[in-house]
Length: 272
Image: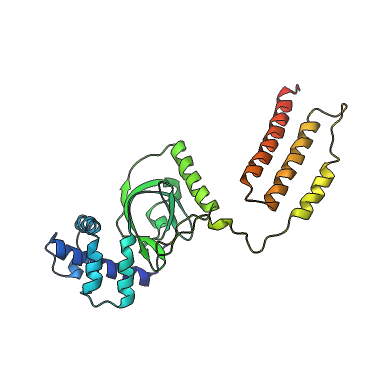
């Protein structure tokens, strides 16, 4: 979940050049060269970084003047940084391919730089509240090397809310893993190209389930249990025939819930 060593070096080469340029233009620190800026203290870099994003036109100025004689490819990378996202984020989980950053209802997949995020923290410490800037880089999202950790304890309610935000974004293919390409809403709604056809199996189950009937002599749980089986099969049949019929699916699920509740009631009443 981090850039390669070569890409990390490339990223900082461009970032320090841009920030050094901003420092010169805004006359923030008395620093003579890029190497000295790269070696400067973190608090100095933070001040330059904040000033740069408050004067975003400096990116266009840098690209136009090209003081470091960068290639067109490098200038294009820097130009894309106008799409920066600055603010507070929750790191909700660490995955193999990226760390999950959440800001309100937006979920981002972010790569580490010289260190992966599992070298900076542990899953057991999540969620974490951090202040940083997200930048596009070669089709991925990275942070700008500065993470402000907030030492805050989160209760179960916030943890569940963040998890739900992530799971909803994952289910609907809304995890943003690039700032350079437009995000397509509801891109998961297109029909997958190759899905197993479960209709024959479900039709067979539905046919067999019709024979399930309780009687006066049967234990009380038989009837609601059989209803639960039939309602579940109906729900599954609708899901595989028209997954986009949200209203129909909700109605079918309500039928499953009623059968479940009836089964639960019978079990509650049972005297052992």
